[in-house]
Image 1 (cartoon, helix red, strand yellow):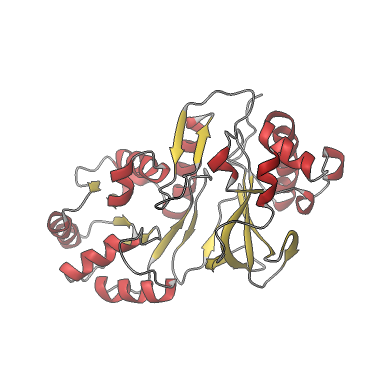
Image 2: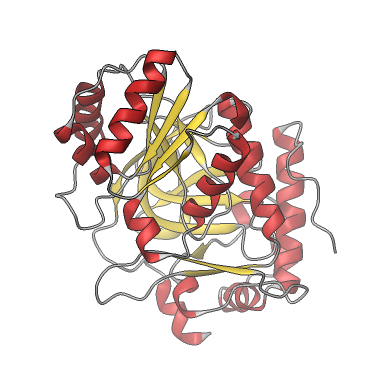
Length: 325
């Protein structure tokens, strides 16, 4: 079965109809997800709306291969993990679907990559390999077709010189960076950016003390002398990204949706207050499109959302079902 047209969804009603179609497909074809639904005593006939769909805790990607029986693995993306913890592995059944997702998502928010110089400061991701973020950045850099686009590992001097050269030219530039590396950069050099978007991908990766988003963005705004910090929200277990163009307020492309569940009850929904983030990512067509994350946040009536933190406990409630699979 070919995946449906995900990137031209005209309305919320069409999104819900397509979401239910994807649920039925994954219930039949993704054995781990089917077993999870069976353990919850949920059948296809029980699911008549998005609110009825079971959301799979992302920890399942650490222990199981979550892949449609119709596909074989084309590539494996892996998470960074921390010392003593196992990493998530996302088996990709159709790599071109991921490429379509991140290119369509980028173009929705920022236009054609050819309009930009794209600079990627992602040292921790480059060092470990297997990163879906590096894969995305590499393709966006290639699509930009600009000789000044590229990756930087730890050569902050070269990056600073390139940024200032591009600024002097008035060249539209995106600096995509992991949080700790962006902080390292502004400690070594001061900037006055007028033609550059700074986009952080989150995470100190054990290199620095964690900061709340507002504090991090205040530091970066001062260091780069810019009014807003953009953000990219994604993870190994997803094939789509949400973007924030300032103030930590994220929005999703039309094939992605964020919902909030009660932190104390993984099968109950909350609205307009802090809850655990559940994500529908229809680009995850050949794995699982319905994921319960470890992030806490708030979703607003227009569908935008903020990240407010993470669960204190390392395992999501309900993950004891993993031992039964």
